[in-house]
Image 1 (cartoon, rainbow, N blue to C red):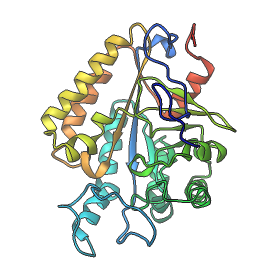
Image 2 (image 1 turned 90 degrees about the horizontal axis):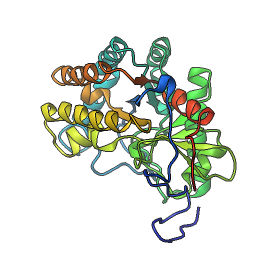
Image 3 (image 1 turned 60 degrees about the horizontal axis):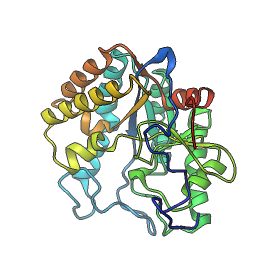
Image 4 (image 1 turned 180 degrees about the vertical axis):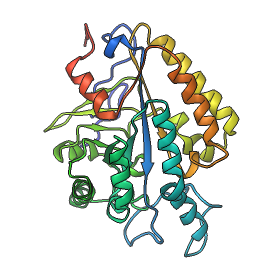
Length: 309
């Protein structure tokens, strides 16, 4: 989509709708105050970045970039596939939370046991690119990006038997045209935009696409790795963030999307802190724990009341 600058916005992907009296009231099932969605990332880090691909220079894991093969960072990441995922899914199940698993193509192809395990736990599996070593960027041509998205979705469809409804780009990466490409490929919601506490519609030339915004400051990589927040402070951040949206949700339903990585939060010395936070959140009445598809399906069928434009 061409960039067109105008007051308050730098693009035309969606309408600017401030969260005040101009926005309608959103009601969740049973009048819940907060819809909680937990995204669990299963992403494969490749031994070396393929020629022409882009990997974030500050990609988390290990002790920082090392000469090939970067065994420490690679194996640190794989801990999530071997150990952390099971610990994290056990914890979510204990609290009655069905995970939304963002899975890339290489994980779907090379770890069939994990695909079956996640399906057996009732998780929703959504698109997550090809690998964490291959971000979507505007350096891609439109055809390259279309082929990238199609490769990811076809791999998940083959592995799971179902076309994914949602999408989270590796490292939240997008080009200026990604929402259009995702909608045309049949994706119904995308989690790359981190700018709201409710779902909202994106403008597309074909198909219907909603943004399901992640609460980026409490993404575990953003907080614990990038910003070096202590894990003790992190659990307080989760509680404090929830307290605020829970209070605000009494008047207008709110959304809290947590983005978690099993290789990081699934470590044995961190998991109890997440357990404490989830126990606190789920100990409140009026919390609807749901998958991404359940949330956007409800939003489509029950749009905000008295919406004014």
